[in-house]
Length: 403
Image (cartoon, rainbow, N blue to C red):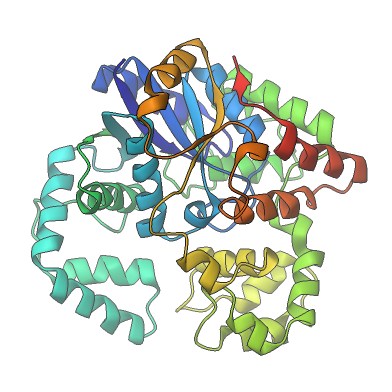
């Protein structure tokens, strides 16, 4: 069975994702689509709207054949490590290719860009360091360094978020020396960070989440989501009482910051350059996560980077824990599959170089420490105690979802 992979968050699964899924299957000619999906916390350092189990159901009901989890130590990282973890898992499970959405939409241009950067790596890294020292954020430094190299028109625009991720997928594939073939399709209509609806049927996940948490509720989102996703969102709200967002964790974050010493905070992953001093000072005068972030944000630190720092504070994730894990995944966590997916897993299981985990009880407890801790913290985002207990119990008791 020919399998291709996609790297996703599905927060939530919307029509743009459905287009990508269908085009991926058509473009690659694959019999099986494997989605490596972030768990409860995401690359931008925020909690997923609904649990990974609910998002797995959305994916399977929309046509994904297999869903596996991208562990916390990769899912909550900047693009380089995020991509490395995802591509490693897609190769390990037996995919022959992968396909990503991008603003550029031409895989040859991505290939040329990776080759160009590799040929000018020393200069590129020097320029990045110079821009960062001037107070430029890391993503902006990457784009500016790329422009300074004078690459011409035959390469992708690295100021665009999906192009950046695509570049890192391609770079990871080369660094890992995998045989995976790469494909890309053009992202439809809405931009990755768009906060408003600008199309009758395609909207970014950002704008969908913003609408859900607005005073209008989720009354306008139905036309931007498959009906199966709408049903899953409704079911989640009915079952657990609410959706997850940073404000749900504000009190816990306050406690962590106020009860930790500066020395303790320095040990947290991504905390550097004295930012812990600002955090401790500003948390005292802030009444919400939004207010705290507005005060904390600077030209040097992007909103996303700060959220990732604060997520690691919330989950007590130390530098050493992450550094010892993020070179390569140690397991494949199976979240769900359909009939075709079951056949694929059965045919590939003996060939997989990593253990396939379908139940946490069979996993190496040291390897899954961060993911279990993340699940425990994620459950605290629910106000109802019984709902918290139910969600946390699911982490240990839920077998792979089969549709």
